[in-house]
Image 1: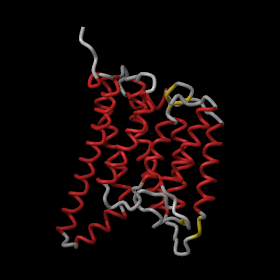
Image 2: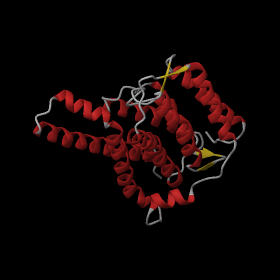
Image 3: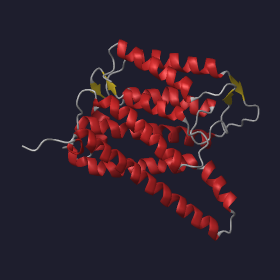
Length: 273
């Protein structure tokens, strides 16, 4: 009887699919930038003009790459599911049940970060509807795209007890490092993003089952407001935010709130991490 090794376990298969997803995202990103640069050079634009364009449209580029990568990887993941449209089936039947404790987590973390950060109004801010929508879609697609992949892997390739926490930490670090080196024009790739990803991944598992509702709400009600309203944005930072923090929020502060939130979730026996 052949003894199983790490390379044949479900955890290793999770890593294969996760790296495949990130690889597709990177290829799409580079192709988009190459096409953009090509047309800019045809118009005899300076390199500085290209860099400015990429920065101002960074969230459109990221969102497009993330969506294409997610759709593409689900074509491969489809072999793990008996459904003809695995992504749609995952969204329809793995929503989960609402837990009011999540609002406590969101409120506690949001109020705490705002209190420590001491936000002040940016007098030069001008509201732009298109930029607001792009920022909303971009931030949501970044975090939830990663989350949906992890959700699918854990639904169709279940892990052994204790392995999910390893996956959460590893995937958060890997995703951060890949995006930090790929999206070099982004100004806010720091340790804060790692802890945001840890929370999105961790909230996929509530009361022992996997679902996307709590990660979706955490992203929409916590991560998106912080990015759009207060500049905790990995690409634009506070360039287009109505408020900016007087005291910089680093990975230390956000990490403390993440640990406290996870501790609360565990004590309430809501999470399986």
